[in-house]
Image (cartoon, rainbow, N blue to C red; front, side, top):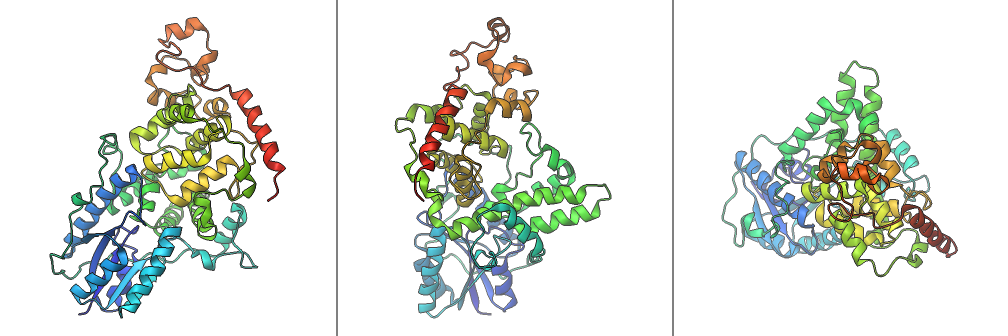
Length: 481
């Protein structure tokens, strides 16, 4: 039986893995391999923590089936060619990635392998539709979400997920240069991630446990509860999707199966509300594929001339540490630092304060999220920041500036979320917890809150800074595209 290399990247699973499935269907003996090349597969510190544990879980899953995972470090094309020679492999199979660096790497690697006489096959698995096959009638890409979503619904369900193999052939080892997961040195040097362990279980089993829990307990109330950060109302599947421990096709079919199996009214609508968020993920990946410069540059080119602040180090640091004096923002930033995750509504509020009230360039916020989110995804992260900043696809109009006080009062009305992450404010009544600077002094004293001592005073006047942001927008509007 001729070996074939199965190149794992952001598809750290055995089920619904077209590369693995097709190699086995064609009669090859699978040789699983992961190549660590930070130049093309960079992750932030939180993502590195997840990757460490996800690779460990994948290796254990492969070993249970009788196989193993070869882990190598260096240039992908060079190592794949070398490993193919060592194993006698006649082919290399992988699942596609869509980020700009990954697209370039795939192209170069595919050519190098073919030049070496190897069969090379790549497959779509990370998205519901291939970006080059899904567009408007004139073949141009969608730049607005609503028509994208409608077209996605009309196109029918995604492909049916593939089953995991029941067994795999053993692989000869050791491979020259193969290392352990620990030798990749992925775990951050600073032990700031200690809170991650209680909240996350990286790996394919962890992904399915999250999905089943969400479908069993939360999805039926998803349309009403998903914007309330104090509630366990969202799926928290984003890091599992990012690392490919579960596919959007699996999520899609599972959600629809749940909806059709339930007899309660509104279940289909609840499932569709959730799947709409999966479609937002899809949309962001399509946008980055078609407009690769948007990882660093605004889609709306007028924003290249936006009058951002230049001396923003102090404001950025206060925001990063959760010390802005704006409770809903500080709570979100502390949730991020503690758990590697932040509720999506709060992400938008935090991003709005940074880009509009503080006029810090959106790229600075994107870089911090990239380093601290376990689900840091180039497409979603860039898209989300540009959406909030007003310079991306389907962006909120620039004049739509989130008022963090109003947002907190609406979506955290009793202050539960703020109290969880800012215990220094737990004694404040709900009326004042989102705006402690307006609370009567005697009430602050009785609640044990001393502004500028155990909780900072707001670093920015929300009303004045909103006016300043709108004036900056007027300058942008006069720019030629």
